[in-house]
Amino acid sequence: MTTHPAPASNAAQPLKALYDVSAPAKLNLFLHITGRRPDGFHLLQSVFMLIDWCDTLHFELRADGRITREDLCEGDTRSSGESEMLPAEDLCVRAARALQAACGTPLGVHIGLKKSIPAQAGMGGGSSDAASCLLALQRLWGVRLPASTLQALALSLGADVPFFLSGGHAWVEGVGEKITPLALPPARFVVVKPPAGVSTPGIFSAPGLKRDTETATIQGFAANAEGPLRSVDFGFGRNDLQPVAQEMCPQIGQSLDWLKTKHLQGRMTGSGSAVFAQLPHGTDLTDLSGLPDGWKVRTCSNLEAHPLAGW
Image (tube, rainbow, N blue to C red; front, side, top):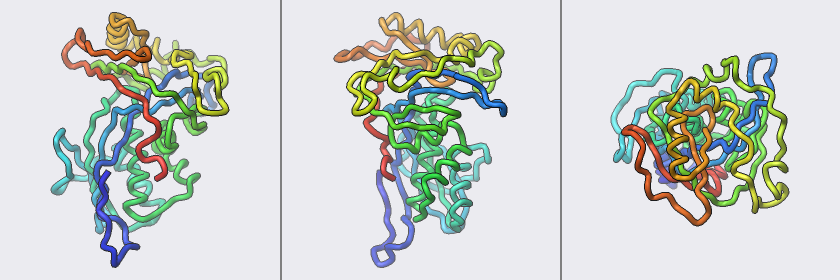
């Protein structure tokens, strides 16, 4: 990550730019639906794991208070030129506007986003981008919200955004707001994303969705929950959304079948449509052939911590 600081003679001013800010994807090692609140929101339990499949963001200070964003193509290293403000539905723009309002700053920003994490994958790409915006813009604008206020703002943007502010892997409960930091041993995974996506609201509204999975515990997931986790079961539990998602998107089943041809047991992450499988310790998968054109596949490692941990 590259910063462009203000001149030393005026060090109290905000930074001028932040470049090469990472926004990592996540995998849900399992995802259980344990109930449903009266307001319709589903209660979940999951382990969210950060992996080294990342989007990259660039931030350039604007003194006019405007918030603009552009998509960058592969090979672009700097945002350049003027771009139109994107619709309010864009998570990066929403995050920037929410932080701007909460802090009362007159400053703005131009955001350049280079996407790598697939959309409609269940890998949290948009939520991770929003969280990285919140963290980076606090530094760029020279502002700081209390942790509880920032977490509440993050939750208003999306259920996964608070996790990406937490700094590492986590045991997540509730609607995404109850986050317990979790250490995980190093591991490698194969991640497959078919071209088709799947509607998250459609999955959660499906009559056949299992909503009564028995509550799990961290101790049930990990052999050593009090200290560094030397032994965890990466195959723990299941993804309760997967059966419904497979009915809606047959390509999820095709991806899982492809993993079986590699002698790997796969599982969907989040609400899909990406699936993943752990690689046995000490092995690597070099043959990634056999998938149709347009399918994305890569091997990933889990991260020790979020690249912006401590911001």
